[in-house]
Length: 387
Image 1 (tube, rainbow, N blue to C red):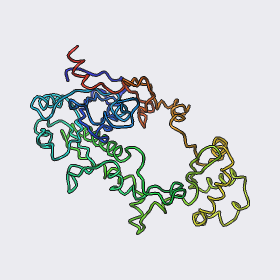
Image 2: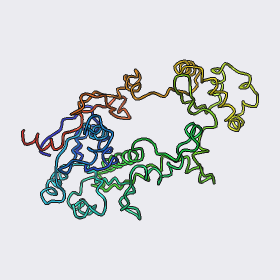
Image 3: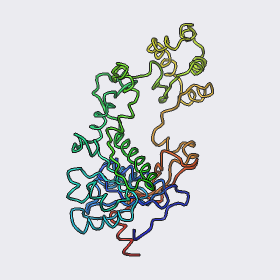
Image 4: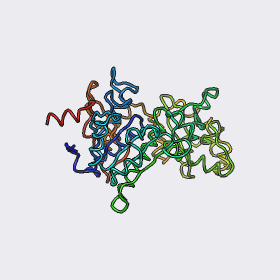
């Protein structure tokens, strides 16, 4: 590349160059994860910008919160890939890149010079990552799919809503997980696939990595698949912990899950050792599962007149696995998140300085950092000319 993007010295992918051509969340999130690890990440966008720039929700008029998060730390270059000049520009970028992440529909790739064979012929050392809803090969390679389609195609939609939501609103239609759950799973798989191929490049050379968000999301439902092998088909009405789960309290909600005997013993103490909980039959975990609805009625009645903070404090002291459900604002302000360095203030043009989640993981025991907020459209070319 003509211009180098400085990354923190502690970044594990320092010196790795990634080119992202994304109109969907999966490819964009893969680039975001690699960029957060220190890679130099450059978005190649059409003159109107990636469609993600126009995707709600919006921080302010015209400023997409989704794009701001996905493109944080990256740069932007405008290239019309349906022209010879645009394709030449991309080819020059890829000649100096390590990883190329693309979600162009399969049927459009040949005309744009983005097919697997064309990229491999021109750039034999490049890691070429395809991130599509249903993958780039097989009978569904040309299928389009929004996140709700991928969630239901992966089986996860069949299981939602469950637990308390299903109990409170049994007549409601199936719903999707909020946001872009399935696409994010595809993005994680794409990033991991890219890193695996990069690790093997000294021996294998460049490789083509074909990622299906459907396949990646299918892996999330491993327990449902396991039970299918046992002859049991899970359904949203039946999929819930026999007792525990989401518990309504006087001023909010907690999540409770007791899997071990010592955790059940702690829960009994937390509840004040009521007579019903001291029933000798409940010492057996199978009996507790059979009587789950009865146990939950007692727990919810007890919790309904108590505050969340009191329940969490006393429960954790007794080794009962439970935690508070936080609002988004509470998550950002929480001292625990501050100590872990999960959020970082970044400048978002048009919206000001905002606290943004850096990464869902640490590297070598330390938090990662973002080098900047999202880029202005085409600023890479502009800054290179000005330099």
